[in-house]
Picture (cartoon, rainbow, N blue to C red):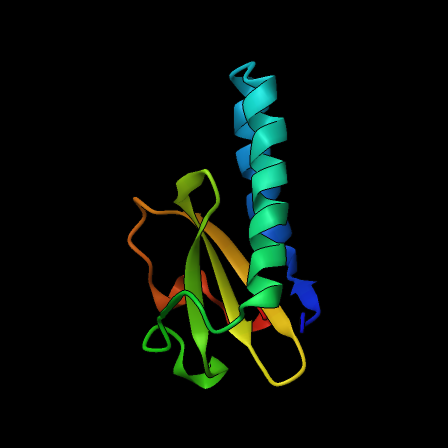
Length: 109
């Protein structure tokens, strides 16, 4: 059973920034492939929402914050919160970043 995916504004901004970077580098195929990989990973998360590493220690008030690498782009991490009836995708961050609670403001969920 798949669960509906809700993309936050912060996630969409992150996605736009990564695609924009690829386009700025004239890596048009990479930009296209990255977008497709993100979509495929989100579909996978919708089908298997309990996968991914639990990182609830970062923002405890959100409940089950999880992270999963993007298909074919494993250094790009999709951060999401699973609830009973939906999945809130809250951020898309590069794996080299040090992640803090401030990367997940209450308003971005």
